[in-house]
Image: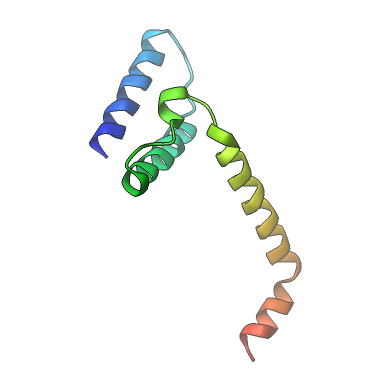
Length: 86
């Protein structure tokens, strides 16, 4: 985790040094989280922080799945509620 934390700080400092006025911190923290978990599970990060991209569309796919499941859950909540109360 220290390695990912250090890389996050290096990347953010580079953006500040380059004169960027606005940094999307939630995106950077999400990249940090994905790389940290991958590093712990697979002994190497995906590369979100290093490459500053959505590696293999993982974040986009995750957002799409969460959007879809939240919509389905809200639309069919009465069915889910009925099943849970059986």
